[in-house]
Length: 408
Image (tube, rainbow, N blue to C red):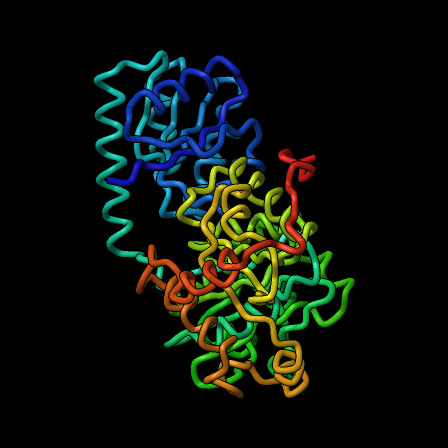
């Protein structure tokens, strides 16, 4: 059984600590964040979509606290709100319930009462899950450095997906997906953000750009300065609506860990971390894996894919895997001419040359991440390793001792 996820809000350090200890000690909960301000809480609710939020109420700030609980009911109706206080006076308990709290938890916490609250939150969350199941499988493509071919992979991955698919270009100041698909863009993510208060199916359909019957693009802003209008909370709200309408959503992310990138990564079910077999590529991949670890992403969420792979490359793959602590799940072959012809044509290679080695490998990766063979090793893996390790002597072996182990 998946643990129930929580965020908490308290200005008192001792209260935050008590709530954290109770949640962690229950064995049934996962604390996603401990917030100190209402703005932080609202942002984390939209970004993390927890099962429940615990709000600490005091008599001094009761009016503001109750107003916040009411606001949470509007902003995040699928999150169970639990009010808590050191002062369990009837007026405070009744006021929090009228504002929208589902439960009241008295401090200091009593074990039996806490178990009852957890049981009720679990029942509420099970009901929410059954009635509001998310439709789309969200896949983020990312590299820790530029020039790794992330946008090309994202475009072809989207084109390889069966069923309704949306690709979202989150390179807000210099997105290229529209040109990769040969599309003229009228609307972009900026228009979604500007109109997010009135987004419905009809408006969302009009603001995305169709490429085919099954593939559509939500483009990056048409002007670079429009990127300033888009915040991580805006992105989370827009994507939350879009994932109800598609079977697959592919996020093409920039190569920096800015708030927009992290918001996209947080929402993804799977992250394809793109690696090129050179020292900068290996170092940036190692750094990215460290950041993912700090963000508490489960290892099953992140998959390392080698792009521009050549059998003539003398980099020992097994050594790279040991250095990264990750298995390489895909090897997209290097074919500059085919890739450039596809980009200049404005048509994904998986369509223009469906039988090419690049296309076949991207289709295999698409099948892997959509869950058909989620734990399978890449089919050409054995031959690839044999081609590398079968040589009598490496000509250009790379040493990783100088590669940084920490993130600055």
